Amino acid sequence: MAGRLDVRKTYKLYIGGAFPRSESGRSYAVADSRGRFLANASHASRKDARDAVVAARKAFDGWSGATAYNRGQVLYRVAELMEGRRDQFVEEVLAAEGGGRAKATAAVDAAIDRWVWYAGWTDKVAQVAGSANPVAGPYFNFSTPEPTGVVAALAPQSSSLLGLVSVVAPIVCVGNTVVVVTSADRPLPAVTLSEVLATSDVPGGVVNVLTGHAAELGPWLADHLDVNAIDLTGAAGDTDLAVDLEVRAAENTKRVLRSPAAEPDWTATPDGPRRILAFCETKTVWHPMGV
Amino acid sequence: MSSSAVAPFVAPDAIGDLAAATASDSALRRFLHGLPGVDQVGAEARAAGLATRSIKKDAKRWALDMIVAMTDLTTLEGADTPGKVRAMSAKAVQPEPGDPTCPSVAAVCVYPDLVAVAKRAVAGSSVAVASVATAFPSGRASLEVKLADVASAVDAGADEVDMVIDRGAFLAGRYSVVLEEIRAVKQACGRAHLKVILETGELATLDNVRRASWLAMAGGADFIKTSTGKAAQSATPPVTLVMLEAVRDFAEATGTVVGVKVAGGIRTSKEAVRYLVLVHETAGVEWLRPDRFRFGASSLLNDVLMQRAFQRTGRYHSADRVTLD
Image 1 (spheres, each protein chain N blue to C red):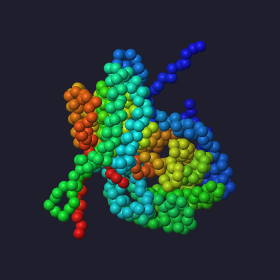
Image 2 (cartoon, rainbow over the protein chains, first blue to last red):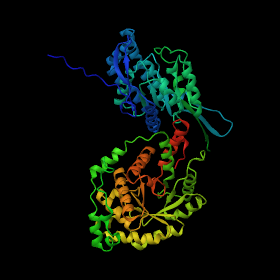
Image 3 (cartoon, rainbow over the protein chains, first blue to last red):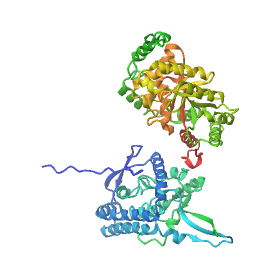
Image 4 (tube, rainbow over the protein chains, first blue to last red):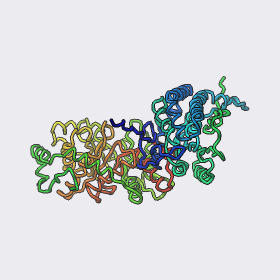
């Protein structure tokens, strides 16, 4: 008797809560850590990036308008659902990054914990970063961090899941929406994370995942006037690209989180809400004291 | 493939003498019901097929400018104020202040009581003032009231009048009532152009759309217009296809050129470009002019301006950089 036919998975993009193929019809072959063929992934084009920004903008009002407590609950649920798919994530991270099962398992565990960590920050960041300011007049004066808007992010190239979560979670936890370009050579765990997000309570459009090349999509996102901030972490080590994107981002004075010289070690717990605050605006209110 | 999947082309000799056809109630009915039936599936397939045309580069730039020049910038809300109409009129005259190559829109479209305000605001420009009238949007009033409505708009200086047909009478088969009403309004318009709104969303079938188009043109319409924008269903490509065929055939049969205005629900440049393709492939290139084809729209203009900016700068634009209206 013939063996069962393989049911191979089609890895697609994640835009506005749906899983479309690339508008361009392109795909590219993804290899595992030893160079063997793994799967074909969608090769996102500039029009996919454009559509993703539209979806992110549409989702922004709802997500930023949700209470911080509610956002925390929603992000915690992402961790719950990832936990349920833990084995799948471990296999995919192992295939993508190599380095042994123990290391892959540790990375997946850390990625799940990172969601929990940032879920906790949603309703605490205002206390830590906000302030009541003494002013010389009869006013209450206080400052609070507010989400910047639509953020484009280039995910780290090496750490396919933990690095991605470490970039995306701080952006969305404060109420931003994000268009993230995955690691070009290791995109598959990001697609599985999209499936988790699609079945969690995160509204469609809050996180949009494009598999493809940072050098191709980055300029369109950095140029885009409806993108309010850009995270260049994924351009680490490629100074020319990083500089080009920073110059382009200057046109509408985007907030830029500059790329590090080399990709950082993501396994360590972040030292405070630095990444969250990179994508916040400070709102200061002068309120008459009344009698 | 033939030039149109829908049409048994309505040949000039099939129409015969239009004056005779509209002379009596029974002749009018015979004429309208004698029009060839519309193949609904064919019309939908044809419209969908044309929607897949890809318009790029120079053609796209031309199309975007043409869409601006064809726009009737519209505000028809209960909450309209003179201030809002003035702001809209300023935008109509100069849609993109930073770019002198951007054309003005064709007209601003308001309720009759705001015509005078709009007229002052667009004075000295090429922008016309259009006013809805005849108990817009339902058209449910006596003829005297409707004519008074038209007179008030025309007296205030409206260059174009958008009337609604009496859909109740049309659907009940009282075609001559509708025809007489259009004729009376046309007379009341004087020198103002008359656009006749068929409200195709309430006409149920494409056969009715064809009949209403011919009826409106026989009554003296300068434009036939799809919808008020107030009904559940507004302009659709198949409906527009049928209307474009009607104006083409009418011009062939009588030599009189009538324009088409699509209104309601067109919000993106992409949709608007598809309508231009439809015009080009159905009525012909002669209809690709602001005096023969119009878009009744409010939010469409912002999207077109954003697309123009993208074509000019190569950067995707933001809604934060166009006016809120």
